[in-house]
Amino acid sequence: MTEYEIACLGKKPFPSRASARRRARQIRGEGGPAFRDYRCQFCWTVHLGHTAGHATYLRAGRHGPIPVQEYAA
Image 1: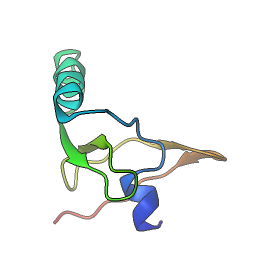
Image 2: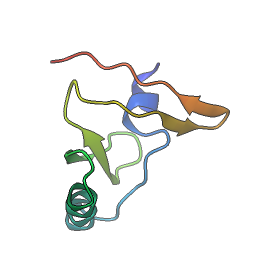
Image 3: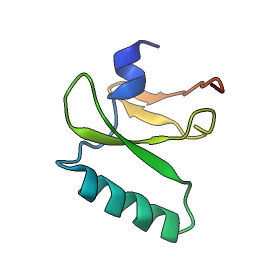
Image 4: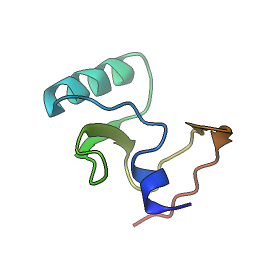
């Protein structure tokens, strides 16, 4: 999996950190995992990502789901 696929592919772009943080709080309030916001180096928008070592979901890819394999930092 390339760096671009890990950082950007299949993730929703947010126009600002504030909007990304609001969505992260909403997801957490619904019983979902804790996310962190970060500025994407490829598309320069803000994305939400799992804390390192905690990715457990599949991302949507162009040709179906992409399995995510993360290593603890």
